[in-house]
Image 1 (cartoon, helix red, strand yellow):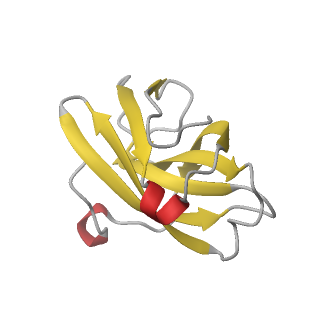
Image 2 (tube, rainbow, N blue to C red):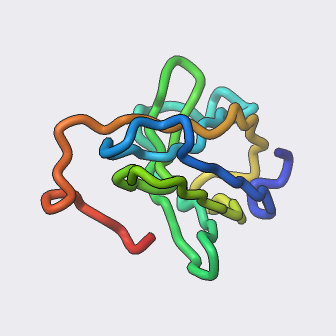
Length: 125
């Protein structure tokens, strides 16, 4: 993606292949085309996106491995019935990310161990 301030990426996901009654995080996995931007394990990004009619923000990306970063979009307890999610990724802040291009690897579901919904920090998703 050459213009990180105008992503316009629609992502549709469903939970058919996930284990029921497990808490999952949904992450966008990406890297900067300019490797000089990645200089720390945590990076303030301010990713703006939509889930349905709600406008949401994810603020911190973490280093996944040598070159790749990930940023959490959503966290949910997987129910026993089929559920689908649709996200529209809109923009990364140019103020924090410069205007560098990114490569997007994909979307990753990660099981989150030992998480109780009562004790989880939730942002308004």
